[in-house]
Image (cartoon, rainbow, N blue to C red; front, side, top):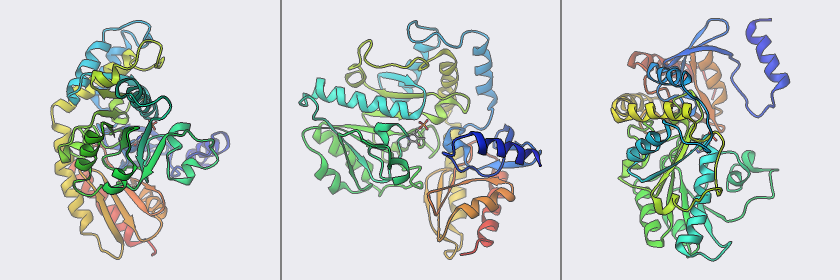
Length: 400
Ligand SMILES: *Cc1c(COP(=O)(O)O)cnc(C)c1O
């Protein structure tokens, strides 16, 4: 048995089968490259669904983590610590808002935003008790908690987990009229991915985010942008809503905020919204811990340079030019923005990601027929070109 087979067998036997990973076992990583237990190198074209935007073990981020490990790592929110104030101040400033509520996973931050919107609805907007509704979109992915999957439209994510949390209405993504129809006096928020990641990198029709903003303003509903996957440089800007110059009431961040080291998430809004939480009304033992704050502060500082957004714009335009030139009999459609692409195939994407692995490129299908490409933003242009050469090869060998 090879080391890979032995380790894969352990995972198969003792891990719940809630994922279907490619048959590779990674032992090391640096930048855009990973090395498996046999010493084979692969170019990472997934970047942990954008959690590794700054590359594996980015030296600035590991240095920040290492320095903080030598000081203090966890105090809980029962006490303040010297990384906390600067972190919330710097992240709020990055987003142009007043307040931050830090959590850990993305799903927790989404839950936090939903709770904030409901509480804001009752206490600020005057919605009758228990009547608040929040609008979400078909194809959404906001995490895996019981409440969040209650408004999922993906049977795999939702089925057999009921009874479901009420209070959500779901309309087609990109459909302004449907959104308008669904809104009423008790609509406290609209939860939206500016680009739907898990659904296959779905970019909404031009003008849609603007229309959502206008409808939310007119209806006094909070526009809540889930930028967990689309934010922090992925599309060439800090936030994907910037492509339409839209400012939501609430941002939700996660994934890359932890620098590929720690789970760090946050809800960012003005004090009229986040001010609804009083002591004891919401919290998290690990949320806003010193190690997380130190790493996320470095992430914020790196984004302020604009360097990563620029890389995503320039290399992303190049990637999309090349993907756009792929033969139409192999590729149905290419979607995305910046260094982020959903390559819609005519058939199953899994065999293509398996062939890509054999060619030394790690990418992953999302749903049946979409190949998702989201390399770390630090990827070198030559490496990107090499990866795209392998994508061409893998598609050529793909039976249709
Ligand atoms: C990944 C993701 C989440 C959930 O984040 P977790 O850290 O996995 O809980 C929520 N929303 C979007 C848009 C995501 O891509």
